View (cartoon, rainbow, N blue to C red):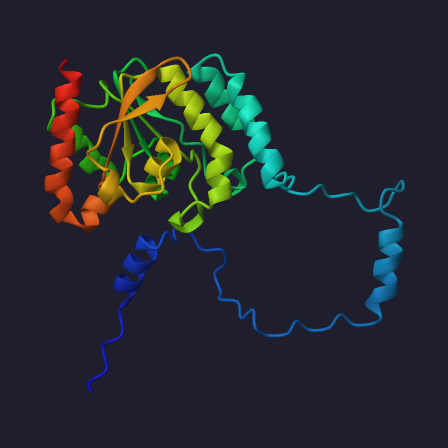
Length: 272
């Protein structure tokens, strides 16, 4: 059997980008399986003497940690629920999220990805979480899937000035991994409050994770998509519908036909 040819550098870089690897931590590789060299015993007394002088005048300065560890998940979820209710406006909600430290994803993300579009729009679209491009620009759906989303809404006469776009998770998970259930539950009160403040006529969930989180279903997107449901914003009940995430359509273009059916159903409701 002829062995498969090894990938070249360009192919490897393309693979790493698709996997979400977008930075290098060091110039040289580190073999973490090698046992570290033992510290010479002669240095131990000096280290103990230096430690005893920490905090004393003239002693070594105390270096503060880079950041406080996030609270336990249950406490973080309760804190998020209480905090989200206090935001009277979208601007206040954004400021609150900038200061919220209950989700560990904030420590690894470049910036908060809050929303894009028109807060007075009749339709709001919600995805799962930001990717690499969104993390860089601070806006949702700006990469390849974002360009496809623009074409999708453009096909029914909409653009970003006529829709409001957000994600359940406002920080990029490392390497574009799937958010954990705990991370989703911590962020859920904020996106619910965001929907309540926008108060759209139509809510569109993009993909399986956002659909299950917001519409309270355990069924997959294949069974849920295209079916109208009621979503209670806390002020009133609005119409909600699920459809495929643009990133999924990029991987499985054969489902664009079903997505087009969902878009036509949305256009019909908005025309009323």
